[in-house]
Image 1 (cartoon, rainbow, N blue to C red):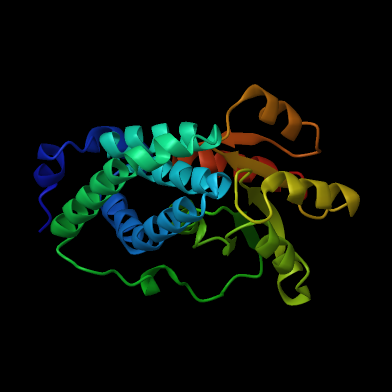
Image 2 (image 1 turned 120 degrees about the vertical axis):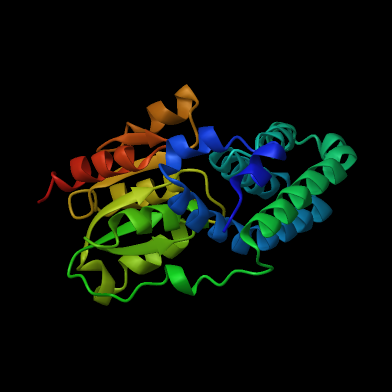
Length: 259
């Protein structure tokens, strides 16, 4: 049996995290996803730092910061946030000087989670569900945490089709076998490769907003970006972090435009 006191005694704000996840069962299940995806994310952060790609570095540390906040890893969230700010300012000196601090805290959290979960590696097979629905929603977000959280919420009602970035989303929408089932899209803005605004531009150019009603789910909360997003015929915007009730509410609002 997992001992939540291990997390609390090591600085994890579990109480705050449960405002999002609701109960420890959901927290633990989603924590497994975090544990399975974080090594690859840390490796990508290292790679972007080494080649000086501050734009993609900022995106990845933003994602790490968000994950850490969701789970109550407040120190990691603080350190990652500083790296996000500095990399967005193209301050490679700061990133280089404080990179070991970020990795040390990230590895501390990973080892803590491994000890808490009692596992070394986690398979994602538990999150892959068979296609059994005739209606689908498309979730476009570069965070496995968010994609799997939404999958868990709606798996009994919809096929949840996920995309890691805008390019993958557009490829899915151009797949005739899939796009006929898609009734709505939840779209992140800040993603690598093809970002959310590029998807919105594509929708506008090809008159797709009526066919695929779209709402935004994003951690980008600056006034300029929000105002820019609302210039497109989207349904609504939901800012991260959000809870299950918020996600259900925005999807219902989005679907009601066509159902």
